[in-house]
Image (cartoon, rainbow, N blue to C red; front, side, top):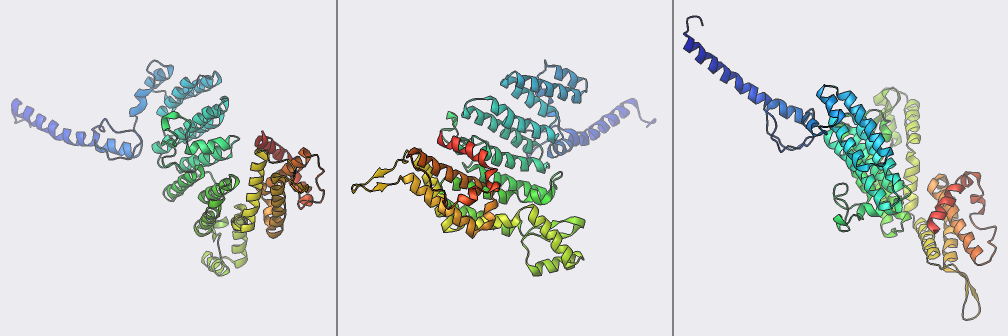
Length: 459
């Protein structure tokens, strides 16, 4: 190099710089500006930028934080943790002051700073859906904030594709909050037909693009969670309980449409739930105590084969199997799906549902026919059919006596029946078919819940 002239050395340096620029550009070029952070679409950019995008490690969203805020000052000093803590405190303050616009802005800033901290997504999604929504009086307003919680969690899954538990939580929220809350009568309908005029009577496409029942959308999310679990195993939750969620969502769907009187669809819904429970969930291989594998839907020959494969005695294999069968109530849900498809059970459910409708429509007064003969009201007739049917159901399917929903429906049917007698100034018979059952302490413990349900249904 010392033998080269000054000009020649400059040429060599220039060539070296150009050569070194090639790998630097190839490795470090930024992503194209139209790429949405957290998406899985094809991207263009340097190798390192593409890897950061794929692994969701980019920091390009930090600039979206309010540049005038104290949190941004901390970010500029490299204090991201304290900045996030400050934003959490601000979010709580805005929530207490009912400043919903600033609350939403603070929450969005938090996830820009901590996009891969799963607990942030879990807590704030729950907070919006369960706490903030309760601050509103109108059901439609509550529904809006429940949706905001769902959308927040959904965004969390987009930014954290390896966080299996988030996919599961979205399914759980969609099923539980829309289907089990006090406002479920409205929420389930709004989920399919949003009250926001922007959607023209259809569902909000961001959370329900196909306009399906909330439990069926929950089922889809649980299926996605289980598929993720095969690649990124879930942590912090009992595995067999985690994997049963899709089938449980189908059972919840079948139960919901039964209570809503959609009897033309109930048999298929219960059959679909039973099929997934036994043929999909029931045939999975799980690991129990001491890593002994087991299968819930298991014949005697299959149990012997598993015992031999696990190198344990048949007694040990059966004990581990039985423990887990009991833990997930496998037999109960199997029996329930058969019971609910029984034509007599369907007739009983239908009689009670129609009795409630007749009560709501004022068909509760006795009358006298053209021959002077007394005629009991339509509502009383239907409830008496339902009460007799419930008594027979408990006799045919003894396990169904332990089902919370059945106990509540038995109590409610008798409460309606007695109220109709009271309206007509009659004394109800003490020996009706459910007399002994509704006096059972195991049912009486549900009396306060039944009273609340009766008030909601009749007011």
